[in-house]
Image (cartoon, rainbow, N blue to C red; front, side):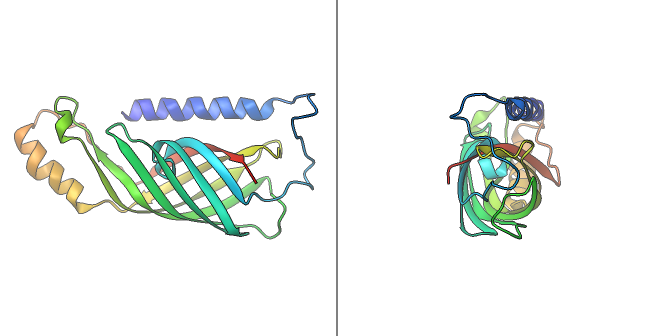
Length: 193
């Protein structure tokens, strides 16, 4: 599962990095100078990570320049996952910088247990996750930007109890659920407004 997630993240990053390098001569494709890009108020994103519900998408709205509210949903390799939370970015003006750091707090999916030989035991667990990252605009395009983050999930104790006390007792040969103390995400955000 981790290999598939890593491969997907690398592919998404390479596709979006190359898309940022594309420079069109089409007058309908907006290319802006560094001084004229406004901060986004509303955007949609696709990617891999907690804020995307696993592999999926999310929407974020900024009622205030530095504080955004978001929700995301996607596939977690064992089913549906979702997250909702608050994103606080560092923005001194209404102009978008090339690199914009942020911190995030959210509630939702942050742990899955997957049992290949017994899918009936697969479960998704929900709790609080915090983290931080950067929004990066390589060519300062108005269309969108990359978003990368590192997260610290506060895992639900029921997940460990479920894995240790129930599933391992009945199916001890199927132990592929490693718990990492941090997680990462990568995605591309399309500016809507």
